[in-house]
Length: 117
Image: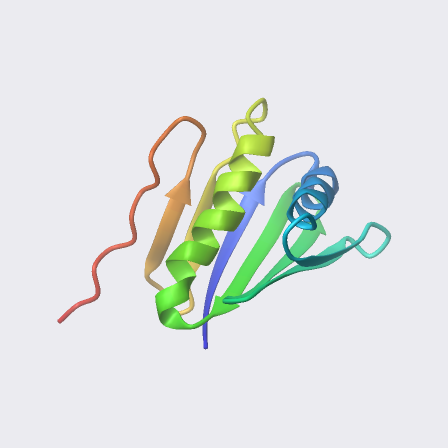
């Protein structure tokens, strides 16, 4: 199992987490507890955890190492699309300390660096 984290700065973390969970609920199992400011997205390839902190939405994805880029993409791409007006940026960092992908509005993702051989 591998993990990747992102801290997305926003004045409306709960709103974006709720919107992401509601949108994804059309295809996967999701859960959002507004009172606790916490939720999950359950994909076939792994899970995403959402936590609304003051001033930021904290994201974590867990899955097989080969699935992390796709999990980062699905969560990051959707969140950036919802946060177009706020110019949200989702920059993932893997549990190994290496950068994951970075998602910004109207840009291709910044790819994760190739593993060292």
